[in-house]
Image 1 (tube, rainbow, N blue to C red):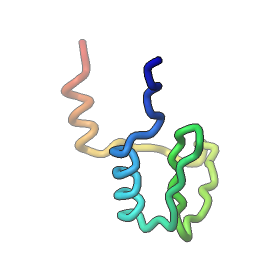
Image 2: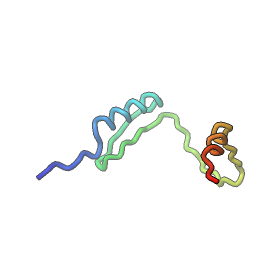
Image 3: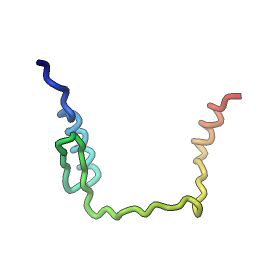
Length: 72
């Protein structure tokens, strides 16, 4: 009977730990389901906005890119 593939590889863990260190995380945990959780210290919860009070304007670089890729 062949072995089943790993849910999380050693490379995945190395990338997660490296990213966590760069972000100043306090802990990295791996659940039995293969989910990697990075716990940040002092991270304030974000409040979702309704989107009605904010107007998003793309940057100039993005506008140039979009203009180049427009079809028609």
